[in-house]
Image (cartoon, rainbow, N blue to C red):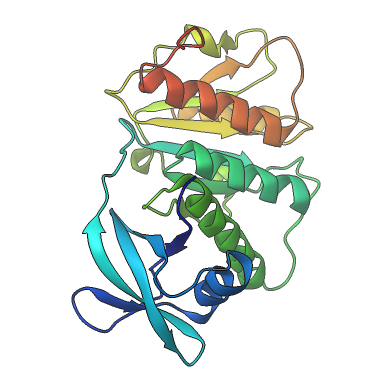
Length: 247
């Protein structure tokens, strides 16, 4: 059974090896995971994974001491997922799954055929997305938090800032099966998934001008969140050298 995990991004460092966790993480450990003084936990920080022991409490916050460093499992490639906004429950579910897979960056896209339209203050919505990503990193023991960008229109993408291998899901006749695209640990990958109404002709033209390759995920039409998880799974497993036949 794995140890309870906590993120240390907002923790206070009392010394080189003593941490005071923030109120949210402390509440989760004490009241959800039922941790007590003397229990060991994993602490996740950007590029670091620590073994901690709970030593006490301060104003309802957990005090933990670092007792060891734990090995990191690093992905061979960096993956950028560009994904059209869909309804909240599906989008949030997708965020958690792609984080668990090990995505590096997530760029929400404001495609023309998106049913969801962002209105008013988006800070609260993005803060919720960040919390969902945080929880997913704890589930998977991922130390590095994926970068979540502000939603963008496709016309505002900067191709020079994207990975060299660029793919976008398309329902066109010229789309290559994703399995025919050579994905290895040598090239970082960007993968774009459109809304359930698909891309417009203009949007596909913008992708092609930015050297994206149209790819197909099979004969069936997939929902946006399903396509994002399925495509990213193939890309990451291929780069890691894992095939569907591996034990």
